[in-house]
Image (tube, rainbow, N blue to C red; front, side, top):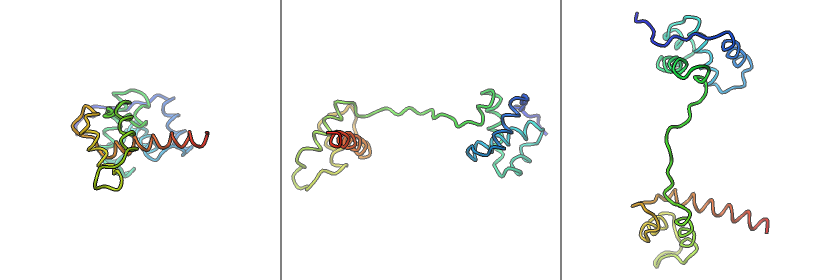
Length: 156
C-alpha cells in the first residue's frame, strides 16, 4: 500500500474544536462531514474506510486531507471562495443608455420591448464594447433600476 502524501496531524485544540462542532450539530452537513473526515484521518483510518463509514467518495476524503495539509489549520472544513471573476459588460453609461432605450417606444412591428430586443439594440447602437449582451444582463440591469425606482416612489 502506498504511503500517504498528506497526513493529517491535528493538535489537541483542533481536535477539540472539531468535536465541538460535531456535537453542536448546527453547522452545514458538508462542514460536519469534513470534520468527521479529519478526525478519522487523524485516528489513522484509511481513505477507503473513511469513505465507506461516512458515505462519501474517496476523492472527497483525499481532497479534504490535502486541503488540511496545504492550506493549514481548519481551513479545510470551510467552503472555498470562488476563483472566477465576473467582469461587467455594462458600465454606468451603458446602463443609462439601456434604461433610456427601455423607456422609449418599441421598434416598429413590436408592441413592447423584450429583453432580447433590448440586448440586440444596445449592441447595435454600440453602447457597449462587446459584440453581444445577454438578455439576462439586460434583465438584471432593469430589475436593479426598477427596485431603486420603487424605493424612490415609496419614499417620495
